[in-house]
Length: 401
Image 1 (cartoon, one colour):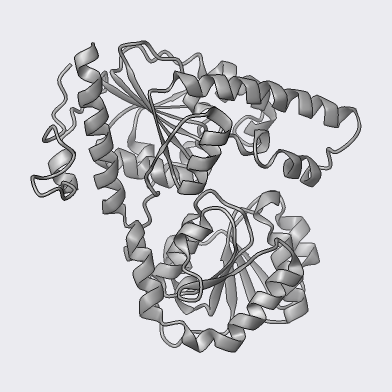
Image 2: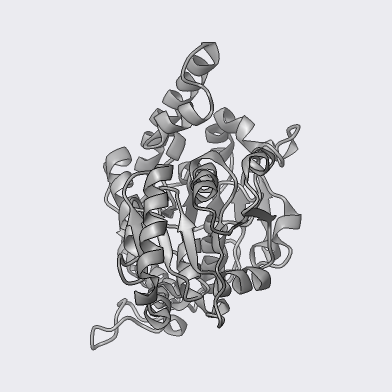
């Protein structure tokens, strides 16, 4: 089949990247092109990436294990043809899909993708394991190799209270099986894209595969500094264990500075019980209100070890300096001493000391410089880099058919 993605080369005659409009003339026949995404139950970073990819490559069908339509009514994802797996019809799957983790490799392998020429999997768990034919090009955009199976394995067991006992050994056995399946499934993919250099290193460690890096798209235009700024700190996160929101709450309990926490998740009730009076849990906030909160905040606090992390970039787009745990993707999105500060240990005391240091020098941070750093991650850059890579890979792949 013939694809018209613009010129055969991913660059202009001067070596500059093509404009996204030159390389995005894709065929829209749904028989030719398909996405695979792990699950679509909440709006998060990986879903923003999928939505942006559909914006430039779609329309196209999206195959996903579990789907909650109400979470995607105002997105491009919600306007696509969604194909779900047998997990969709199992009890409680749309609310607690992770309970079915052992079945996910089987479920993703049941998608019949034979009608399509190009497959793009958007994967942080099992989507990359979809089965393909030799005459199909399969590109995997990796948000992370399965975290709880690889680099967060021991942390996951500790945070889940699964370090000993029969439940621990059962879960260890399941994760061992998933690790073996994941490593093998990654060998089926023609090309891998990682969302950061950190993730590319994780891919190399887990899969022994090299990955191109394309940073996720950030809607920086929706965030602006608001003057005058106020005295509160803020974090935006799903309320799950590996985000370390409890660490932030305890640190600000010591500091006494106002802290606003935006986000929902299974730990909300637990965190609300331990939050002191200066810490406010706001729950989910619409984008317009989030932009207001970030635009007025003194600084954004980020205690997780993330593969990329879109919210710290959104904070910087709002002119808000970032105080982040110095590991993972934050090292690629925050410029220490210019757009934020790092704390080197994932502990309350390290965060307390970093906040106090920020209070001492915060006048040094220039809003314009913080905001300019976020411009590196604009959506049009993602569109341009993605279409250029796909264009190159398809033109290399097509003569072999």
